[in-house]
Length: 164
Image (tube, rainbow, N blue to C red; front, side, top):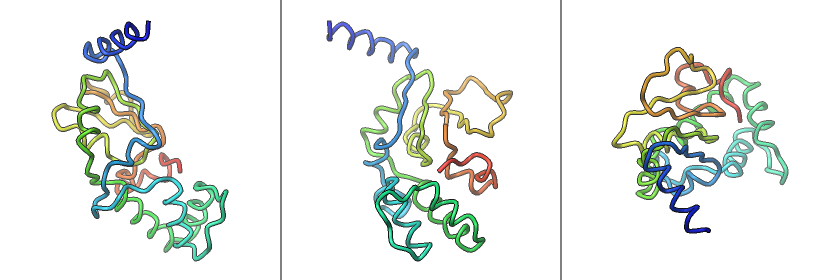
């Protein structure tokens, strides 16, 4: 029974009818633009606490810390720089490339980073974020960023579409 389910799943992937859904943990093998590890949610919380000049307390919510940073124009700019440095121009692992380059119908991610985009080395894709106009969808494989993506900070859309 298990072998049959596995075989059917593999067939659906290779027929292009399956979707890939990635989230926390998928990016852990990738490197950021500085060559370090892509930050986890807890590591990002620690970095935001550093920006705020406060100690991290277990249970600090990432969203609350980001809102505190966003309330000050200087801290907001520093947070945006931190997000861009850690979540854009990433370097995916070979395993991530192999997985992403299977013939998926679509990819959904809850991550802010561009690991999936950077791993797409052989196929055309289209990034779809919360502010994306669906009229612009084409035949490319869509990568749905459910919480927005760090790269959009450069475009000024982050406040409306970026969910930390």
